[in-house]
Image 1: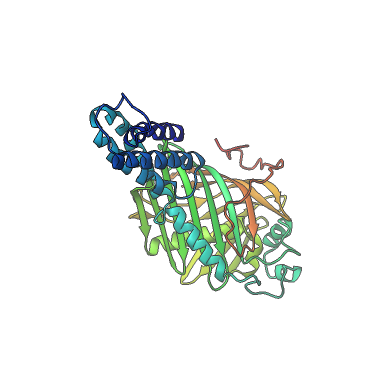
Image 2 (image 1 turned 90 degrees about the vertical axis):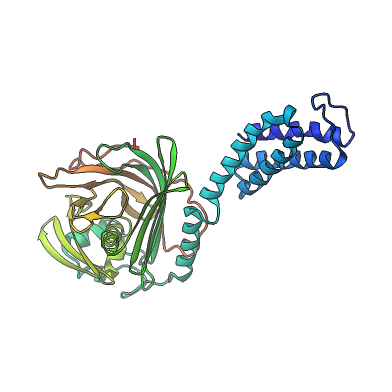
Amino acid sequence: MGVVVVAHGLLHLLGAAKGLGWSTVTALPPPIGPVTGAAWLAAALLMVVAGVFLATSAPRWWLVGAVAAVVSQAVLVTSWSDAKGGTVVNVLLLAAAVYGWASQGPRSFGSEYRRRVAAALSISSPAPPSGSGLVVSEHDLAVLPPSVAAYLRRTGAVGQPRVSSFRARIRGRIRSAESSAWMPFTAEQVNTYGPHSRRLFSMDASLHGIPVDVLHIFVGGAATMRVRAASLIPMVDAGGPQMDRAETVTIFNDLCVFAPAALVDADVKWTVLGPSRVHAAFTRGSQTVGADLVFDDHDELVDFVSDDRLAGSADGKSFRARRWSTPLTCYRDVGQRRLATQGEARWGGPAPDEPFTYLELTVDDIEYNVHAFAGALAPAARPACRTNPAHPSIHQGEPR
């Protein structure tokens, strides 16, 4: 598209050449005066700049593109019978500019996410939220059930700084129902802990080639989820007490999977159900939710099961009780910690409500105790991981 726009801009030089007396242009028979010629020259320059900006994804290219399309169309009207074919390029450029504004402009989900992350990290304390010291110690693990303590040791939490925040880069695929098409996605997430705890999640997905933007915000006690098609058309706008409860389960799942070291500072009441299974009652603000954590013989978390994360309708306006689980696999060393970097999210079960997988994800990178927003995370190396034979249905290797 950028090349087409540049070529379109260069053709405007014909009008400039005739109007400014640089050359005789037989392709444009109607007379063109110096003022109109200057307008053709301005349109040419704007179009070339817009094409270059579009091709290089320059910031705010859409603003230059919109101005270029309007100015170009204005000069085309002056020689309509001979130049009207250029209208097609102007319409396409203007449509692209509108989408660029919607997807990248100040009202886009991406811009809101970046603003909220910057605000969250500016008040996130670099010190541990609570506890006995700057690092996680065996003393902190002494109050945990044996299987949970063993899991934290396995993740490398002992001796590492206590967690006040994390930032993760994720990819995978998602669908809204068992019969729905899969949507590939990339996402970024920032969680902060302590008195100003927040969960911020931004996803870019694609459905049949149409971009789908998703933004989850959980600040204070209020959670929202918004979805737009092509960055313009609202699809979901969910919120309210049931959404708050559902997202509280997600917050706890994030703790267990992405930031297990932060469990030592979380408000959790544990009940041992067996040597490899515990029940947790997690409290955040006015919400208390429950989940069962399942561990394997390697002291690694392999499943998280909760009946408190309500399933939302397609439009996010209603919720119903349904079991939610997140079987995990592919443990890798991420910096100084060992984490599950592949997994699924499932609705349903036990029978007769048979489970189905609606989300498959891979964690590409994660960093802890982040105190400034510094743009996109760099791609991380992906060493071989140990998959878990206890969950053979979990996708192996890259998400499909």
